[in-house]
Image (cartoon, one colour):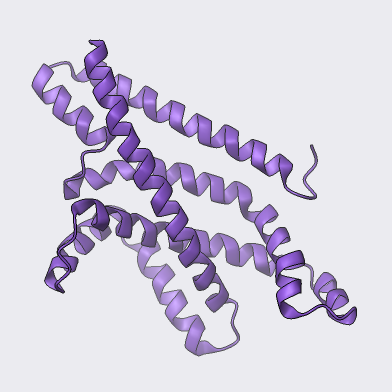
Length: 213
């Protein structure tokens, strides 16, 4: 396989990384809200959060992408296919991240929270200094794993017309009749990207407060 073909795959991988990073960040923001709703004592908040998680964890991502891709124009939102892809990935990862965060917040020792209340800390201070750091430390490995899963799952956005790494590999394999070399190269790029994410995640995890170095 020529260097030019490999460069095309590398260029397409930029779209893969960009779509994945944006989706993960948006999904994390949504997940914080959903996890807060899950931990609420009001059924008015808990039930919608449970429905959200059940739907986006129970329906295949491919179906979600196709549904959103066709739904947005139907309600008058004519957006680029890359926007539909980001929306689909964001909502999907939000459901998984919300469950991870819920577990993290639920694992915060109540003794620490009660002690903080006794010394006069406000709810905001308790959340920022106690609950959030502990929950993040407990759920960080799961969040890194979810990021890797989304990077791999981003290959599905090709079905809505986004030219990312997998779609580029398919196009090049069809035009050059070199499927083995093309897909092996694409697999290598995916491996390197995910290896970097895992390595960075491990370094960040060790730098978190309270984590043994």
